[in-house]
Every structure is written in C-alpha cells, then in structure tokens.
Length: 466
Image (tube, helix red, strand yellow):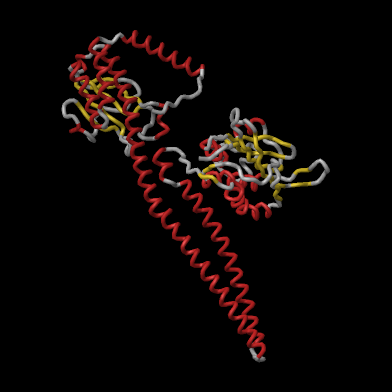
C-alpha cells in the first residue's frame, strides 16, 4: 500500500486537535443515553458496511426503529426538480421512494414540529458542495422525520438533530463515491473509444503518406522520361518544343510544391501522433497518473530538433532569432532514458512560450536585440554524491518576472500579471511541464538573468542505462 502524506503543517495539526477537543466537549454536553450512543455507533458501522444507497436509506430509518422504537421517514431534495421527495420510511421501506411529502412538510434549516412528527434538517458537507452531486439552495439537502412526537423528550430531539447531520455527511460522501465510479466507467469507455476511433485510424495516415511518397517518386521518374523525350524532340526540330518545355516547367514546379507539402504533412503527422499516443495511452487512465515509457535516445536529434523545426518559422515571423549555445555543453550523447513523447511536449510548451513572450531589449552595446537561446549544462552531484544532473535551458529576452509571479509561475492556472490580459493562454503549459519533468525524477525552475528570463528543467544523468 502506498502511503500519501503531506508535509508536516503545525497550523493544521492545531486545527485538528482543537476540533477533537471540541467534539469531546460536545458529546459531554449532549450526554446521550447508552441506547442513543449504541444507535449512533450502529449507524456509523452499518453505513460503512453496506455500500449501496438503497441500503443506506434503509439503515437510516430502521436504526431508530430497532434501537429506540421510533418510526421515521427520510426526505431528500430531488437533484433534477429541487423538490423534496420521500425516499424511505420505517413503515414501507423503499415503497415510498419518489412520493411527494405530506402537506406542510417543507425544507427548513431549523428543526420544526408538524402534526405528530418532529423534523430535523439533513445537512450536507459544505466542503463537498463544489462537486454538485445534489441540488441545493442552502446546505440543507433533506429532512428527517421522527414520530410519534408525543414520545420524544428534549434529549431525543437533540439526538435526532445530530443523527440527521450524520445522515447528511455520510450520504454526501456516498453520492460522491457513486459519481466517481460513474466517471471512472466513463473514462475507461472513453479510453477504449480513443484507441479504437483515434489512435488506430491515425496509424493509417502513415500508410497514406507512404503511398503519396511513392507517387511523388513515380512523378520524378516520369519527369526524367519527359526530359529525355524533350531532348529527342529538340534534336528533331519539333515545332511544339517551346510549349512542351513550358509544360515541363509547370509540371516540375507542381511536383516540387507537392514534395514540400508532403514533407510538411509528414512532420505534422509524426508530431501529432507522438503527442496523441503519449498523452492518450491507456496506462495513464488505468493508474490515474502519468506512466512513462522510457528509452535511451539522442536527446538533441530526437527531442529538441523536431520541436525547434516546428517553431522556427513562427519565431522568425515574430523577429526572434535563435541561438543554440546557451549552457556551453558540446554536442555529445548523454546517457538519458526518457519518455520521448512526453518530454518532447516539455520543449513544445517552452518554445511556444518563447514565441508568445519574447520581447526586444537593449544589450550592453546599445543594440536592440530579440532572441531565444537554448542549451544544456552538466551539474555535478546535483542529485547527491555521484548523481549528476543535466540542466536544459530555454532563454528569451525580455523584462524579468516579478518575484511574486516567479514564485507561482509553475502553478496550475497561474499567468504572470503583466501578460494575463494581453496574450492568449490558459496558465496550464508550465504546470504541465512541471508534471512531466517531476515524473522523470527531475525539477523545474525559473531564473532572471541578464537581458531576460531562463526557464529550465534538470534531469538525473544516469551513469549507465540498463
């Protein structure tokens, strides 16, 4: 079993201890009878033992009947109509489910009496209302009716107020659990659909691209034959030679364009397939976390250069030049085993940000410059003695982030204050970068440097790869 613990937080510990002491004082003040205490414990035990909502409803109304000889009825606010409905009672069990309440029975945030019954509000867990699993106008999600009123003491009424609260809290968690189960089933079905309707058909495009490449080569061969015929025609003083040569030039231009389009399509297909297959793989959804498929690679050729190729024209259109000398590490292979599909998306996000946020600055010589730089450097013993790291940098010219923004720049949904309104974005990209790098055992960071900003990530540099 994996143990998940947050870092020790003294203020939170103080809050927990304070609540425990408050509960101790409350129960001393309630002074429930032995029978009431046993009824409450039985409800807690059985609410955990029986998983379905139907059985939970039965437990809620039959525990007071069996332990204390009180009849009861459970009412809940219908999630679709927002109207109060009967759910279960100790006389007919689930036979009343869906019926309207008797006249005069209403939702109330305070206990009240009506006819021969006492009604206590059922409150949900306020912290969970964001999940929107139940309709509500207030935190009251139903009412709990107990009868006959004539047999109830003031202590009984207090007990049933607290009992109704326990029903609400337990019910809210069970509704969330059921919603989560439905979500998981949907996700599993969706993953199967993605594999069947997206991933598998996408592979066929590779076959189509091969056919196009084959036809382009066939056209090249035909062009060669055409040129030979034109040479023969010219020696024979063919009167249509000029027109034929013009057709040849047009055909050659069309084939050249076709070859260029093919190369663009191929690069787009390869990159899209890489991202689709790395993000939508079944293991991510089954385990609820990113699952790596590591393999040794030439990091520059297989990760950096394909992404740079995607962005170089876009960077050029914005007047951003590219420098690949940042970090000063010679071009050599490093023993890195990474998930190429996922780590490529780290660079895609960093280069995309460079395109959006790189700005012109003045250098020490008074020249106006605007450029992006990338590179890497080895950090000896960064991850501990004998455990070197390699730092990958992406630098852009421009004003530094504020200290406040720099501290939160990798948080989910956060966007720097000076760019949030002026440039498109969701604040998800750098958080995604952080997740990918951390699942590789690395760290991410930002540092203000002369002339601009450096975003980096550091991966463990393995001495050997098994």
